[in-house]
Picture 1: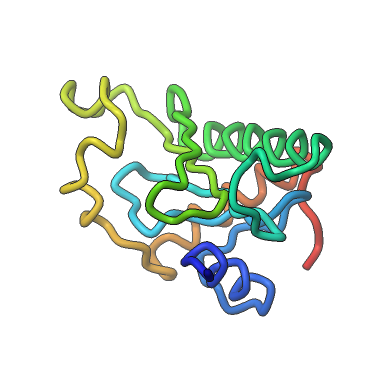
Picture 2: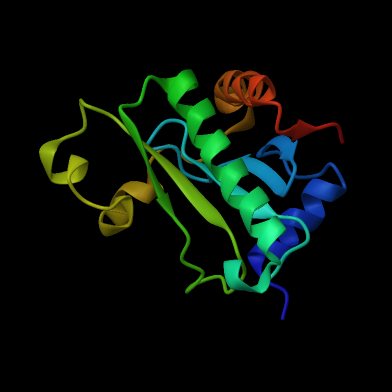
Length: 152
């Protein structure tokens, strides 16, 4: 069954996904649909698989290494104090990983909780290519410095 993840990866492959930051070894680094946490990104595997456990060990290592490199790039580009990582797949049953930058100036109720516990905030600052392109370019340049990006 095709998921939103399948659709987004297919669009990335066809250069039709405006949220793509960079092609990485294991998949696509993309900016999240909501930017209430500035720099929130996802890593979408290519090819799409159901779960991390469906990957061979070398592909698991590549995916998790790319995810950590994405986190490094977000830290560099945003000045966040840490990155929260999550791999869930309950809503969209295909592997994808979230990288949520966390900031010292977040309200206390948000700073100490999972970003998913405050779903009302997800409606704030939806992806806008013109507005978010500079952030994507900054994250992309930081990703390039990791040596984990690939030409498309």
